[in-house]
Image 1 (cartoon, rainbow, N blue to C red):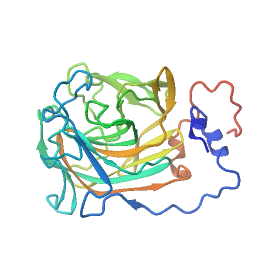
Image 2 (image 1 turned 180 degrees about the vertical axis):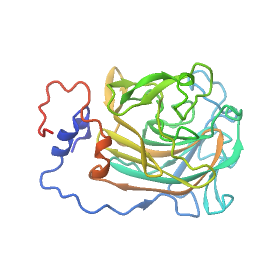
Image 3 (image 1 turned 120 degrees about the vertical axis):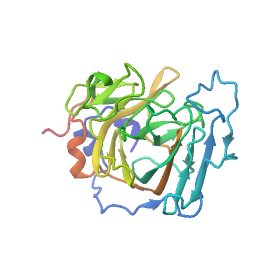
Length: 313
C-alpha cells in the first residue's frame, strides 16, 4: 500500500484500506537492534566538539562526522550494572540503524547516568536523549547532529515529547501553554516564559512545528525504564512504562514547496548532553495498532474534505 495515501485519512478509512483479506496474525517477533556486545548494525554521527544546538548553515566548526568517535561517546560496557550501550552525551550526535523501517513498534530500555555536559550541565536543564524514527536525509541536518525525523524525546519530566527535527511538523490535539503558569505540567521548561503545546486528547486538532509535551510523567527515577514507539501509517503513539504519553498524526515536512509525508526511515538514538544507558533496543514490523491503544488515536484529522468515510461509529 502506498503510505502517501494515509496522509490525513480518518482512522476508520485507514483500517479499511488494508489489503483485502489480510489477517491480523499474532504479533511478530522482536528484532534485536543491539546484540549485547558491539554496535554492529549502527553508524555513528557526531557534531562539533563544542556541541550545542547549532545551525549547519552558519556554524564554522566542522562536525566530527560519520563513524568518527575519538571521545568514545558511543560504547558498549557494563558501567550501568548490566551490559548496555553507553552514551556519554559529551558531544551532540546519534547512532543510526543501517536498516530502515515503516510500520514499526520500537522499544528501548534505558537508565540515566550521572554526567551532564554543556550546554545541558546547568541544574535547570533536564537530562535528555531520544528516539528519532523514520529518519531520512543527511546526517546532521538538524542542529548539526540529527537526521530529519519524528522525535520521541526521552527527557526527565518530558519522556515522549515531540520536537521538530530539521523542519518536520505534525498534527496534535492540544493547546498552547506557558509552562510556568501551569504547575500541573510535569515538564517545567528550561527558561523563563517558555511555551510549548500541551497534548490534550479530545481538544481541537491542528498542525504545528512547536514542541509538544505530555500531561503525564510515569518515569521511575534511578532505575531502568521502557520507552516505546508505535508508528503505523500516519499515526504515532509514544509510551513510557506501558502508558501512552503522546499521540500525534500526519508527520510531514515541506520540500521544494510541497508537503511530503514522513512514514519510513531509519532509527536514531541521541547523544544530547546527558549520560544514558540503553540495555535493550529492539523493533518489530506491525500490521495494525493494538486494539487496546485505538482509543488514543484521534478519530479524525483536519482537511478531510473530499473523503467519504467507509466506516461510521
